[in-house]
Image (cartoon, rainbow, N blue to C red; front, side, top):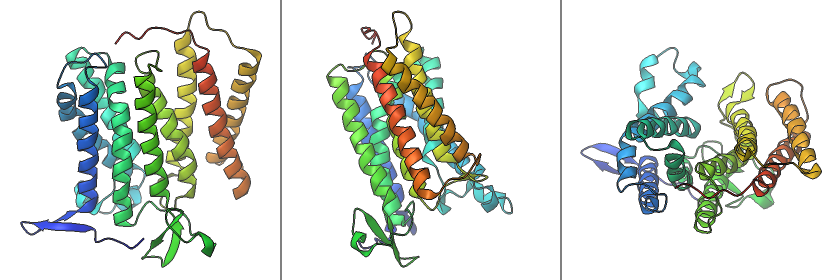
Length: 319
């Protein structure tokens, strides 16, 4: 694929970038999707619009803050650049954290269960991420390592990056497609009444996105680091772990574990502990073994989540 000029057009002498247009488009379509689901989730009309006035500014602030904290070397000599958004530098996980905080504050103000707000936002978050990632293609960023095999020098496996003169893994595309799949899967499951309690849609969104990010982040060359740790990989693993145990905790009364499920959970804990040790520098492994470990940990946590969810007592949702 050939590169595209980052500037879509100029307005009153100011360049308007494709990245901003795509982010705005993702936000718009995500908002329309949420508005179409308000009634189904038992929420009042215009809940989405009212929430966005609080959630969007906080999402932008935290997206920037997250990036600055883990890229402090870029700003320590000129702190005023922190406020220059036109130079880029935002992080999706920061946006999710800020948006979630905005949703929580909105739920407290309006006395709406936060779980209902989170469920409303989950598919829209995935849709917005799927669209916004194409801004990374236009900017030629968020790509992966160099693809050495010439047979793989084609999109969507790889993408040509002009600044390096090489083909790199198209990690932005992998995440975009996966987020489209997450959005579709959540909507289909919702229509088939596949979610049992408030908050389940958001929990599954978090685990599914974390599973993808855990794996794809290992291919990227521009990860944010905390020491030698890829922050997004570590956070993704923690989200997967928390998701599994929240599902188990919410089952509460009447819940029993079969022997098979016990071994799945034990395996998930053991493999997660080893993966955490690797990600935090506890010991080193060669690349192939490390990738196998990450994939194995991700899969076993998702399997554990599915088994736990299938065996929890069914409870009619109080939407």
